[in-house]
Length: 232
Length: 179
Image 1 (cartoon, helix red, strand yellow):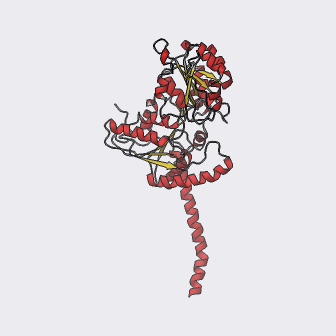
Image 2 (tube, each protein chain N blue to C red):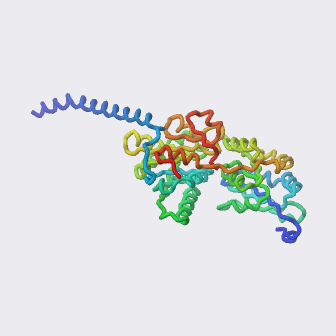
């Protein structure tokens, strides 16, 4: 008897495994193509009172200043709760974000609905590209952990390398069906003729739902980008 | 610094800033006799250098001997006040420093750091210089730029506007066009 059952299993279980595997791959592929198709398409209409959890990626240099400039004109009661992420070695950005959120409370908002987090950096400025492979993997694992916790509906980023692992994971979440995040990328005002590396990656891989540039030269060079003029 | 002259001479401060970077080339050239003489000739009285992470230390001077008064510091949590009290700003090409200065309506010379690899910063400085919002220089040509600058020819920079992007984001997310 046992010999028979083991024969039965040893005959059909490879087939079963293969069938499951092929089915799994097919589902992923179909989802993948669906996400590619759906990326960049506006969402369905919603009521003005609905809220969307928002992930805001900050960066050293002018990035955070530019991001706060954008946040000033976004409706705070719509894009809430807000999650700010900055690189672990960036000391100033989260502080600037905290000051910004505090100023909202001062001007009458109900309370702070914001969280501030740090993430390992994929690559330090000037770091060799060889060692960057390892640090990017570590950063991606950390990003995965944070994204599972946050699962944002909206992602705002404007250039720092920290946004790449987060946006790639957001894309994977779309494929797997964990969360549909609308990804908005605004290339930095400092980029006049050439895109940053982050911008180039997100543009070529078509991961961002909307890709904005601040100078007309870039719009001519990258036709799928939307020119929105200078934000600063 | 210059207390004895306060009642007689108006203070015209040149503020040099390198932001959070290390830009010894700019600090050094700003502290050079050539540049200081040129600034003094153009009617400035004080030179204040924010030197960031650099290692070159300028030489402080009270300016009592009929030259530029020189002072420096490394960092400040906000340079807005220094920008506001300056008559001329000489800045590295960081976009934050550039726009903070332009939005305050201060005359600006941007000095591009040629030691930076893949220097994208120069794109912004050159574009804004082309539009006559500021002067663009390299450390070695700074004194020439100061000698030849005509601040009245600079075009004021009108602040940008983030509302078009906000509108597009809201529309994409399905929110109604709003009041």
